[in-house]
Length: 335
View 1 (cartoon, rainbow, N blue to C red):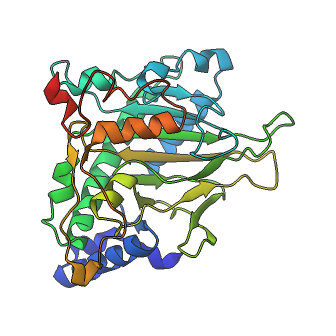
View 2: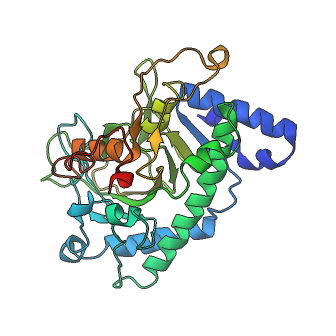
């Protein structure tokens, strides 16, 4: 899969190299939905290493300590999700993974603070909160550059997608895929086949095999994230806005033959703000072809919580409809 991994520095090496990079990005997103970058500006190897070490200390805490960090009332979009606490849509068993979530910090006067809540502190791991905040900011800045390339690949103004997602409730997920013991549920895997609901996702720091992408013909292809780089994939929201021209590809994380294996990785889910209306883009059909997947305008919050309910992370009625909100109208405006 080296044909979808490129040097991000080409974006700053002159018009010709940037144009070639944009074309390569367009081709990758229309065929595999994934594109990898090396030569990153903000996600340094040192930062990724330090964050991984802090995450290892978090996952080494006792079950009781980790259970105290779960926040089900927030759809587990903050704090811990314990093993088998997330189930891919249609899967027969939950995923054998535990993970940590942190999100953007909003001022108390921002309506987003009502929906998103606050991050959960981990004082038992010195330096954890500070290191994860640094990692969050680096992912945010890195994906801002990536979305500039995506905008140009769609024939849009350079800042179009970056501005659309500015200030969104991006979620940093630090993952620990667990060994399989004798009491593992039948059919359990590290990560069931799924697409991401978000705008785009950035993946870094996988230290074990397992990530696989499903091609259009149904075959599964193993992928490794480039060392000291990251992989970016299209989420359902961007796929919808492009009418299916950029693919939100089904992917999974397969358990390895050795049941004692662990796996660690980090994912950053980039979202527009929850009141943002996601409308289908009018793209050049000569370049991109006709719409392949219909998309109805919807607010980001409704689309997000619909998926959280499907994944069993949020229990109850979609909060963007239960108080009489019309899902086609920005919910925060109606407060």
